[in-house]
Length: 142
Image 1 (cartoon, rainbow, N blue to C red):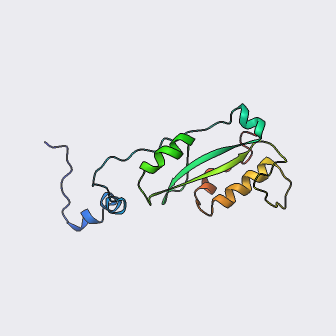
Image 2: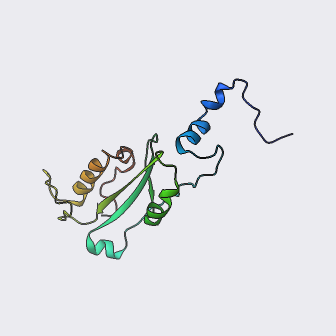
């Protein structure tokens, strides 16, 4: 008895399978191992609290509902190993203190960390819509 799945009865099932489509899009060998994305909760350190902000890094598959938070190291070094065109990446400046505005935005609200974080997520969601479903606590770590 073999561990291999039985071949499909209809040959068209092969070329329409998600694995086949993925292999075609990414130009990888069918069944090739792909690096997994390691989700992380990144906490601000003392320097970040002194500065008043830190960077948060996210990766999302094009068809996913949510983005995944990753470490800066994963974002900068391992993202390149993921399938091109299948994943997007984005970083966000996350404010920890009120009355800071490094983006030099004009807000029609008070200059709080909550409002800056909310605005940064809205702006970033134009490139990565999954962020709106991922980041909802705009006062996290404040």
